[in-house]
Amino acid sequence: MKTDINQIIDAIKKFRDERDWEQFNDAKNLAICLNVECAELLEVFLWKNAEDVNIKNIKEELADVFNNAFLLADKYGFDVKEIVLEKLKSNELKYPVDKSKGSNKKYDEI
Ligand SMILES: [Mg+2]
Image (cartoon, rainbow, N blue to C red; front, side, top):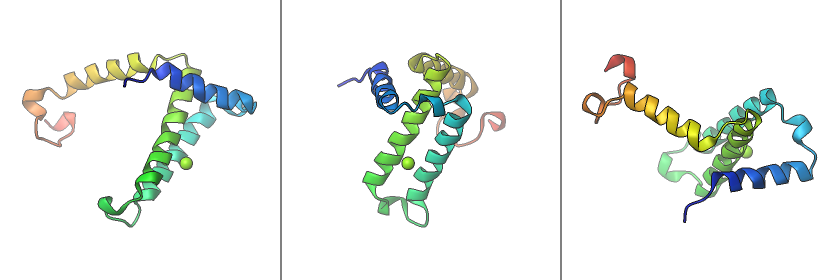
């Protein structure tokens, strides 16, 4: 089943608005919060082998990352699908298949 990103964003905003939290959600705080949640995701992996991590914790922290990323995108009126697909196109130019397939080199090294 495909999920409409805008349905997700609407649900996040409903949760936020019911609590009157938009006042705390300026772009700077959302960017900081996004980074904090990324750090919490990293913490799930800290000192563990990747196969030993708690999957439930990964899901929860990943959801927190998405929540903040979507709110930040919404703050600027970005269309998430559009900006992700645009960046993918840009990355396709940076990493042409014939030069990057099977390689982990950065675009300026290929
Ligand atoms: Mg978290």
